[in-house]
Amino acid sequence: MAHIATLPLLLRQLKLTSMGRHWERLLQQASESRLPAGKSLASFDFTQVPALSKGQLEALAGTADWTRQSRNVLLFGPSGVGKTHLAAAIGHGLIEQGVRVRYFNTTALVQHLQQARAQLRLEEALHKLDRYRVLILDEFGYVKKSEQETHALFELIAHRYETASLIITSNQAFAEWDRIFPDQMMTVAAVDRLIHHATLIEVSSDSYRRKQALQKASERAAATSAKPTTMTPAASPPPS
Image (cartoon, rainbow, N blue to C red; front, top):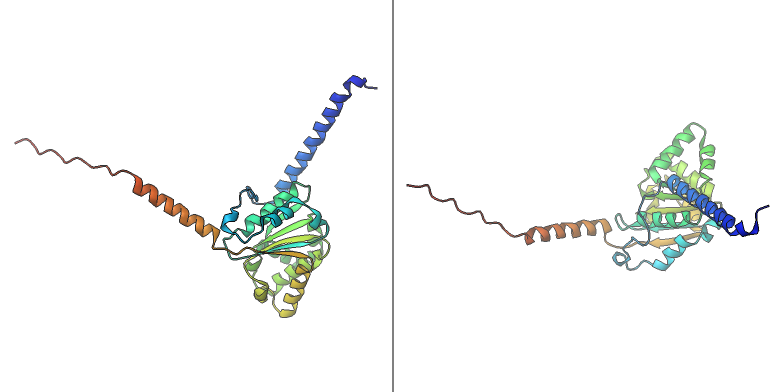
């Protein structure tokens, strides 16, 4: 039996080992999530979108309670306002709490599910996604309106209804989702399942990416105009 004097050292070693395993698990989950790197709420410029509730987003990223209730988060707004950044920031925050998250471009995921459906493996593909407590479906509004792909997308929504969480970003409001789904009945059914237990966030602002591009262009122009002009001395006349 270990001498009692060695217990503090043993406990410290056990704690360090446990912490090491914890961080290894977090790193593994961050890697498998495929989330865009460097996206956090701390790096998001809330001054560009003043109507956003920073506290609400911090609560979504800082607590996993809503994922245990199989709630969804839907982020709406035009292109370039930071929806992907916010969704990824929430995802990174959840991973720090041990929640398994997986990021997808919606079109790419739907094409994968459609292929599985054609091979009669859709149920298997959906169950494989069940390992992730939260799926992030980015650029939801860009899904092509084809019967095969939108049926696969609806199957995903129905499969995860009240069993797991979705974070969705879309540049199209619900009223425009008939451009995604082939008929109104499927559109209503998809929307109903998504918003039944959901937090809806509107990200309304001028394009953040456009503002950044204009600012950089302005800074380059200012830097160019600030450079001193070097006068080239006139050539001396040749000796006569």
